[in-house]
Length: 387
Image 1 (cartoon, rainbow, N blue to C red):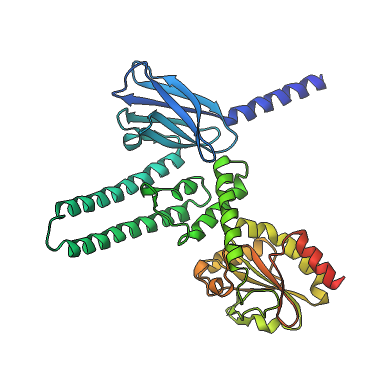
Image 2 (cartoon, rainbow, N blue to C red):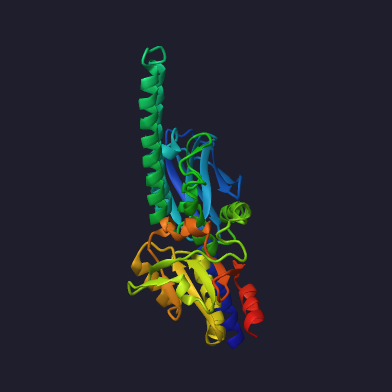
């Protein structure tokens, strides 16, 4: 009897698990041609993969069902130029109404807040694109004008203002959706072919933040893995470019840092001379940093009585987030400082920081004897010094 009950319980739990992974995506289309197909494509790492297709009923209705284990991007598509991007999560029951002639513009969606956020973003993007197109029309209307140069300068300034506003809107969108997959899509939006809203050189910190947040949550997602691989390649290239920096090369004295601690008292890096010091750059919003903190606690507890100190510099934006991170990770035993200026912190250019976590191991004279030591690499290096 017990075995039967156990078996039934296992089956019921298994079925419940499957049900939680199921999704439905249904809709009603105005002006749709009955018995024509509507397609559902899944966004992989760098390409679209056919997922399913169904015939549109006589009343314009359709329905897709499937199973997914994590959030997935799907394109609901009538043609190559007529589609709607959706973000489907396990268990979602999504319904929409739209005009078959313009899915992406007219769709009204229920059951998917994430998809609605993308629709809202795309509406704002289309406004910016329309404004830029109007500037192009003004240019064409004045091609033969005697003061074309002045007109071009004025149009160029207006175009730059439009792009700047869209850039700021996109950053704000990512800030408010940093834990959601919708932030990933925002990184790759364009106002025209190959003209991206965000510039990976100027806005690198947003690419890093999205990568750090999403890879921690969805390491098996193809789009997330693609971004993570791109970021690793880019950061590696940047590390090579800055490896010869005189500020942070091996044997150089680490540049001075004098910043406020949580109590508002200024603490200088040079005040730690006479000890081996791990100079660590982190932030409470940085998931990889938070994952590394237990390793720092282990190192600190092992060697704090042998002349080892940690000087941790935060790139947080708010004091509350900074202090909450310190408390949650139980890392209040060592030195903490920050100017709370995020990537505008004075330490970023001083140390050529391209990504966090980042660290430097300093000898008692403040000279750099190691860098980016994490996990077992840090433990091994310290053991070689103290054990």
